[in-house]
Amino acid sequence: MDKSKEADYLRMAQENPMMLCSEVPMEVLEVTTHDQTEPTKFVRGFLERGYTGWVKQVFGPVPMSRTQIDNGVMALWLRASRLNTSHVLGRSDPDWDKSFFSDEDLFD
Image (cartoon, rainbow, N blue to C red):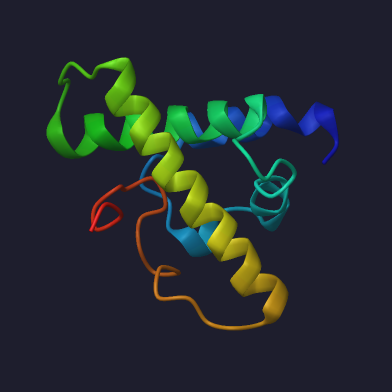
């Protein structure tokens, strides 16, 4: 991904915390797989901004610990990686119509 687009994508996550999985740019999903051991700095920032925005929209301004945020980011990173794999393989995914930054049902 072109580094100059990162700021735009970070802003997108912050301004659109309710976006659906199907609305996340494929370019962003592709970079989720660049590091197999943990999200890159950009991916972490994208997911954290969207996730904390989603929590605020759904639950209001609630305090969140660093651990809660990190757990949400990791769950969303796994979802994003799976969505990218589904896209690459041309198969459907049950999350395409779900809110991308939502962690509901990701800890089951």
